[in-house]
Amino acid sequence: MLTTFAIDDFGAFSHLRVERLGRVNLVVGRNNVGKTMFLEALRLHALGGTPAALRNLLLERDEVVTEITPTDTDEPDLHLRVASLFYRGPSGRPGQATITLGPIGEAARALTIEPRIIRRVRIEGGG
Image 1: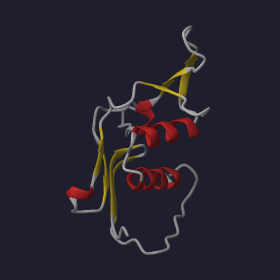
Image 2: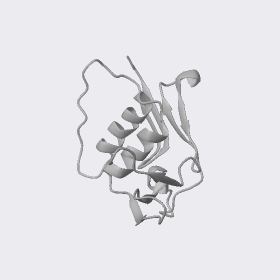
Image 3: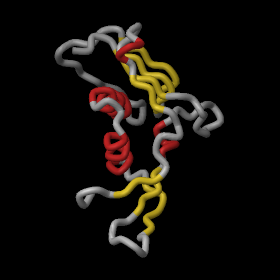
């Protein structure tokens, strides 16, 4: 069980530290402050940041730029907005920082995601 959680350079968060997590936690706040992003970070960490987890998160958020159907297969290729996962600094543009998610002070259990992980993916199993 996670008792602390840190987020660096993910979505709306440059740096976020949650010092105390319990078995049950209530996440509250005004609209557009990062509640869902916080839960997405926890989910990515729990799933190990696999390419499938990243792809599914981007598809659920509808972060698809274009769909291209190749001529040699019926499965479409998707161009996903991977940059939407990364913190946007004061300029409003995503930086080239590495996302880090995990317990505070436990680097061995931290998950890191680099900007170049996903470029194009295929829908597998119909979605």
